[in-house]
Image (spheres, rainbow, N blue to C red):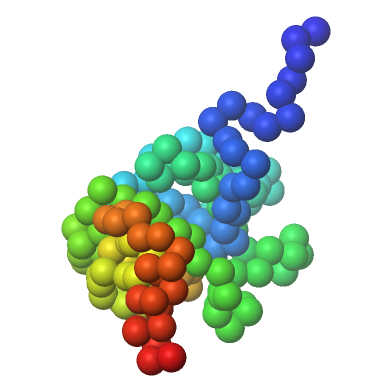
Length: 156
């Protein structure tokens, strides 16, 4: 018997798993907004419109999705009144990725801006209530430079 690896090929130790009201629609949206590639869908045996599990990849990174369900204990952002979590995407062009996502239907939370930690950074909320941050790394400031820039930015 072949040895099974504890972390499946193509995954890292941490993988976002989104609970979504309308997971199938979310997959289509993420294809448009973020260039996601659909890997798999597993519909519920008793309700093929409900996804028990799905997987997409964005920039090579896996993201799992499932339809929200009180019965399964999978609560989406709407059921919870929002989300404290954001999925962070590094991209080649923050401004272009931000524009594409907003055009697809994301709400802007923060337009792209150069940040003191060395990223060009933007923040969005998708139509399903999930928060996304988009960044392009543009500089490698030292910890002291970041601290000084943060102090300047926040007036302290």
